[in-house]
Length: 235
Figure 1 (cartoon, rainbow, N blue to C red):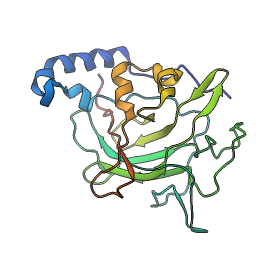
Figure 2: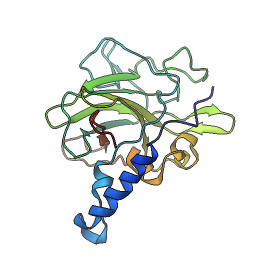
Figure 3: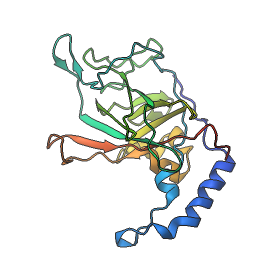
């Protein structure tokens, strides 16, 4: 099995605009401790990445965004449960409502629920593998899932845990990307992740932490902000 190491990233014009905006407004957003967070860092376009060979395609929509529970038998999936939430916004940081957010991923063993996956690792019959939802008025979405297992993508290449995203909304360009977990050693050697710039990598690597208000004390919660490009934006 081999995933593409050459995948779509921002065009050169996008990169120039990213740098221009960041330079022009960096001084406006000074945080405590002398850390500067620019407009470009908070609302720059989310970098597109390959969908991989295991995109499940269209399925019947369901409102269940919990991938960890099997309602047929009451059993739960294997692995570390995480709550994944965030917002979908435009380049002006305005929330985008009614955006369709799809996710798909491997189970805890690193196996996808696809006949195309040659990984001999076992499937988890109680894991859902795929889900979708629509953003609310504030552009917010959420899922409950697990940290997927790493898996061999090619000779001497093991992909780090990651979750695939596909985000679509009328008036915006479709985005396919991937989200990664902060602290995973394999992130530093992943060919797909390393194909992004440092700024782009920072936007798709999420820090999952416990102690988030409103969630179980032991739960790991991560926030993945996604920025879409308007079809009217030609930059």
